[in-house]
Length: 102
Length: 105
Image 1 (cartoon, chains in turn yellow, cyan):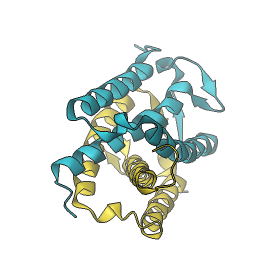
Image 2: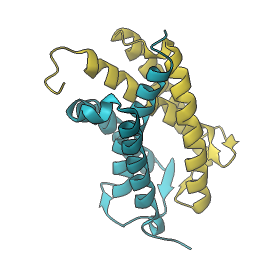
Image 3: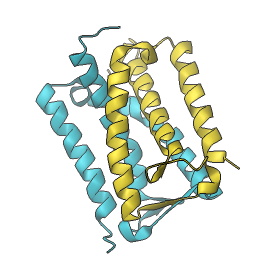
């Protein structure tokens, strides 16, 4: 079963939902696309290098089976979800006047 | 050839490189370190939980030959560090991107 794929879709949908619910709306900004492109480019290089070096093994039965070129497509979706969640959390913390950590 | 320090070296490189970028462009994340930690922490906990679940369900596995051998639940220590180092990198490139796109919508 493509569990990894499904989890990625749920995570991305949740990030999109929270981006709108919390009114951070980072996904709509041009800077988001530039930063995401940079994040994905870095991930492509580093993850393919580490996968080639044998840091981890992916169970292709849990994915769609699409490799880019070595890592599964889902790994990029995982990275996108982590990026999206990090940026939302950062913007939310930054704008909150009651945040004691500011 | 497996080198047990390899993954930790990658993590050190990510943190070191990200700190350098922050210093070079005088970015907010390093200047507001408590804010940075408070925003990274909830994201890290959720994604570590995902990773624990993924390893348990067999989505992926780690080759401990490239790692220090310290295990937290079913995660190598380096993987736990990953979920703090990488969001720091992501927030940094987000701030950098905002700076160079002139805050355009």
